[in-house]
Length: 558
Ligand code: ATP
Ligand code: MG
Image (cartoon, rainbow, N blue to C red; front, side):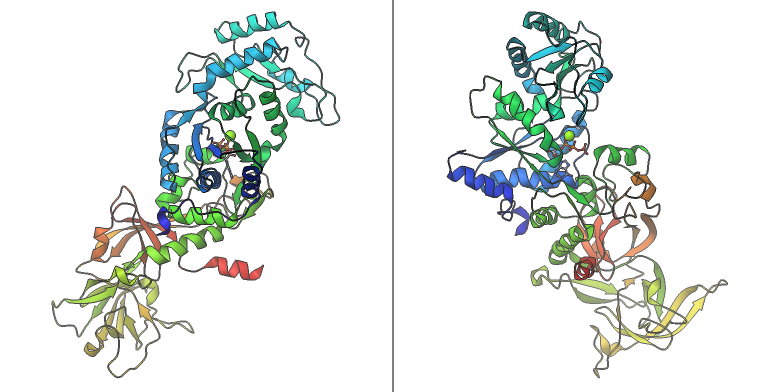
């Protein structure tokens, strides 16, 4: 069963090749990775790529992957996100073990910072952030050294301790590494290591008044944990020399970790920036982080995406150093592929129209056997009640059919799935001309759906017995953003927001077996698509994905 299978060798990408080479050359003797989310939001599909790489690589090479919270910024972080991230990693199919926190290393980081100060490699700067940033210069633009750059180690230590003890106002000072204000790589122009913040931290409370920057915390946390391969996205490429510089100047006891960058995952019609996703939630454009239109793992899960489909997608697209945007239809292909194999088939009528069989014996109920999953004989069949009063889909009847319309229309015979052949005799309409009831006769000899004389019908329609139907709702989803690349034209993704991304249908009719659907179950509504049962509201279904393979059309074109 593919569902528990999270350690299969992902393709032969450059990271795996690197690791294999290092192992065979003795550069490393084990593989320890980490997945380092900042707990300031929920995980999204982009994180899934990092998780499958970090955890997958460790598993393939018999190593370990740490889940480490990069919780160095008290302003935006919260335990709510910590818990959700652990839950999402598990859902995706990985066992994170005991979570680790960068904040647990604050004391060690502090001591290492003092070490750099003592070596003359760090100094306290009393300038404000804007001044420091302006002095950094730019490409071809020289940097300007801070007037505080040549403080003595003693003076720096005293000031740094005062910063730690909460004796300095926010923004009044920072600790900077003393590297090279003319370095061609801006990251090495005396980067900031510590800022003063008096905000309480979600784990350390009021203990700290100074917080390490990403650059000062990340490689050092990797070293503390014995990480061998620190995998991150390409935008950190320019930070790698700084990552290495810090490690080279610290009294490490073990081998220094190495950073390797890979391309971010981007999808068409999708934004993955946490800031943008938070905006969608706060502006009420979606119902929350787990709205089925969100590319968060919670959203995709509620939408009915199997975790295994997301893993297979990540494995298929692989890992490279070239940024690119994948078609969302490819991800949907994997979702459909899994659901086609696993989802039970059910009958649901989303926009009901009444069909009465005029020659049906009064009050008689037949029970027909319907196959649960043609892809999986072991799923068996179920008994579905059938009577003379039924619901069919409004789209399946036309009083005045257009050309090539093969479904029900006066005089036409069709098959009601797994039940009987019926012929339309008449229909009622209301004052506006809307059809209210369709009348049919049936062929009693066609039970099971085959005519005794072998005559053919052009269409088979799903149905639900009115006397047995359950009533509920369905939500149909479209892309949240119309453009392939949201914001491509104007710079603002919100300009491409699809204001009709959700259609809510109430008064849907479901066959009785759907009353047994567990929270989160995904089924195929025959002819309509895959639908996920809401985790909280009974008989509310979210359309996961339609039945038509749009990826085939796209890949044939290219
Ligand atoms: P955002 O920029 O949206 O806030 P982030 O990159 O800051 O996201 P983190 O929580 O810091 O989010 O990310 C944790 C890990 O996930 C990092 O190693 C990061 O490189 C990786 N990651 C985040 N987004 C993507 C993506 N789109 N594709 C691949 N990896 C990603
Ligand atoms: Mg980040």
